[in-house]
Image (cartoon, rainbow, N blue to C red; front, side, top):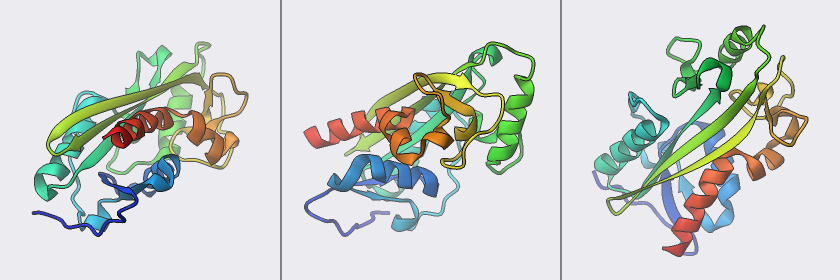
Length: 203
């Protein structure tokens, strides 16, 4: 199905293969007014796209290819994971559903992670985002990583996901304490999206 999108000619139009409003808002803020970022809902897609990949890159590619094949629009998708050294890189690709169940229960995910690290001194971790972009059938991927540590308790009220327990390197506050503006200037997703933006603007 070919989807026609009314486009602001002054902006680069692109579909972000997500209906996660937190991610959508974050990416729109990072990309700024040079881009017209459309959500899946805005192109009439309510599909529950399966994320059965074994890596973040796999899942990002699955989502982007699904939308490109069905709607024939230039698009990108991301997958993000929290990798904890002491847990062998877990929860990784399973970050959003770490505590089990169908939904993305951030509180349950954080509680499980804090419980598993309760008596562990090594709390080093990193957030990793992989973005898969499809333009006219051509696939390009970008990644972003930020290192940090897992705190011993939840701190701060902003952000989403694991933000209240992740303290980025070089800071003494969690993402949830630093606030959206600072997070969006240093985060894993910000780094990946910056690479995406550079690529799109060069095209």
